Image 1 (tube, helix red, strand yellow):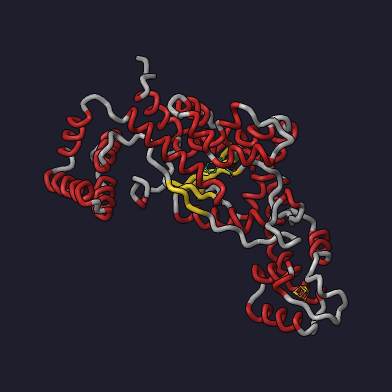
Image 2 (cartoon, protein in one colour):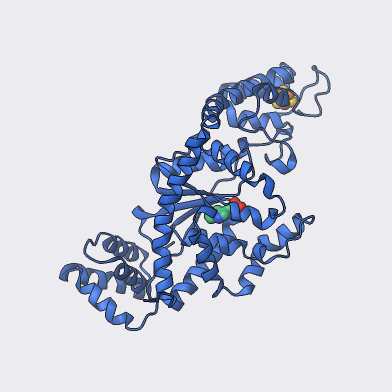
Length: 405
Ligand code: TRP
Ligand code: SF4
């Protein structure tokens, strides 16, 4: 659990610009973002610096990949009216916080992150023995902490990065949140709540500290959250005091695990560009139909008269995403009895995919034809994001002794 009250949790997530997105991205990450954008204050950004940590040699395609990805976000319904969308490198505060956090981050923490060695082995053809690549998770920590995000939607492979972010935040708060005269400042701040609330706050804090009462902790957090006449820095002290430490400047975020996408690729493996089994969101409908018609099926069905087993067929996995119960039973029955042919079986899937993509492609075309609009959306997002990021950096600089007057 993080130390932020529920109602005001900010959600932040980033995606590396890999170019045009596919159905795996849509069914995995993007649908989740679209849901979250209505429930929380969301920040979604293009992690272009992260792309450079591994693809620093491919800068010619970077810009195209960024815009292709943004067009796809917008086309599927990630809504710039609900969420703040921006490009990481346009908010240089991420880099400044990364630098400052690097001062207190032990090398071992970075070397220990599982993705560090994994990716180096996986991307053998690239030289990833670089400073930038080692710092990948810390840059991600800066992305998160610069917005004081409470929830970070990520896939399983990224959970370790959020964990490390928590450790970095804890270390930061421990080191810089223990200002001189902390206890006195806390006392002053408690008084400002008024007698009744002050008493309640102290009681709840005691319940949490002495009995580990989590309920009391969240009640106290909600109480603090509702205080109108306490300034932000005092609130941070009171949040920190609740949990025993110093002032909480950078709250610890929680990972919000994105359920693994059920979207299979054309070969039944997970849909992924590196497997070459994708259907891109903006792919031509003719080509999509053809790809699906050519998809492998249960190898036991050599002839039309051979019965098959849907469990051994990647097409069945697609039915599980796209078809209702009725169609699913029709597939089961027809396949096992050789009552239907594989092409018959694929028809409802082809129809469903095309129907799903038609409005997305329509909207994508509108954005493609109005890149000025797309750029403006990202500029507005950048401005909104920067405002938040600047505030955090002002605090961070101050506690790190960098505020010269
Ligand atoms: N590393 C993430 C990925 O590869 C992308 C990312 C960068 C990110 N910064 C982030 C995700 C901050 C969540 C929060 O998917
Ligand atoms: Fe696969 Fe359908 Fe053919 Fe059975 S009938 S093998 S489920 S495509």
